[in-house]
Image (tube, rainbow, N blue to C red; front, side):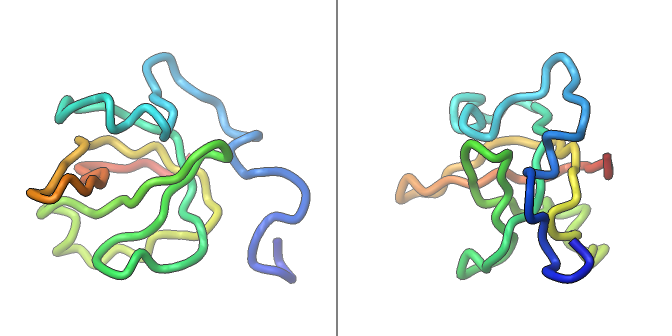
Length: 106
């Protein structure tokens, strides 16, 4: 991790504890605007707009900070397990993202 800037052997979430109720990233679009939590890590790359790629080793989606967090200009750590609470949002063209309302570094 220190040399490459990313884990070389296992996904960081393999070492994090899941809580009952944490949704898999793949299931976030099914939550349809309900407040949910997901255990994820920020992955490499830029989605071409606000936010970042979040993943759990099985799937990835775009995550964007909600209005309250966007003003804080948080430096979202790469490959660090985070528990993200928020809602799945969809735009008028059917594109979706996870809007983060709160977070916790795990």
